[in-house]
Length: 336
Image (tube, helix red, strand yellow):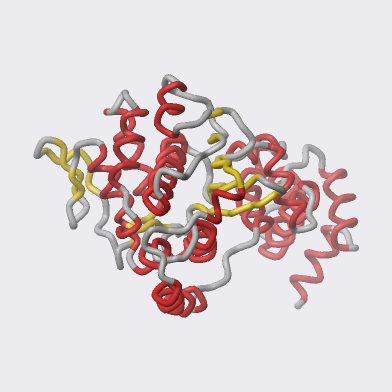
């Protein structure tokens, strides 16, 4: 199950004027308003973290103020060895590269990516879980926190071109622009900070390559001990399979559920040499083969469960995928 370091949950609670105790109790004015399972090895399940954000959102009508409070509280030191490696890197570029590679040690619910195109750089934040309302606030806090800490790294010389979010604005957009010190655009293709590439060459105030490399060695050992993260295609596949019984979903729906624009969704599939049709066919084929092997439901039911309205259409598609008819596949599977 995806998880996030408990530090993020504690700081989110503190930004809202609450306290999250070590045993998982969220206190507001001394009263327990939510109880989460105790963090294990400093990690909180993503669903628990998002439940906490949902509750905080409902009790904090001024979300822009909450974002500002979170950004002022979150510090790279809160990220342990990764935080120290980030702020002792020689330049802002190297700091962001450290985050890009090692953020998976902090959480597997989102990834950062640094993209340089000509004289423009994008620092993108991409969710890896199904969309829910809590993620919109989470995304705003994540980028606000990063913008604040980048300024702490290099000083007032840092200038941002713009900040974009893929969701609609729920507060006064001018307040976000004032906070970030640049235009903030909502309903965009992605969650990202845009800046000039020359900003990446700014030296960090506490930059020390020897110290940063030493710390990075520890991070590298940890990252190598983790299983490889799933590909984007396999993540889409996991989202698709449970929804097939209600009909074949459109790419727009899947992209929205994954918290990204359709354009970004197609681009990330293309980066792996895939199309939405490829992944959809794999989801339908894999589920159909599983159900045929189990031999507990009829072929007509399997057609429905894999998103087909007619058994004949399913049969033709299955023969195209596997090279044999569903009935023959079931017979062969039961004979082995």
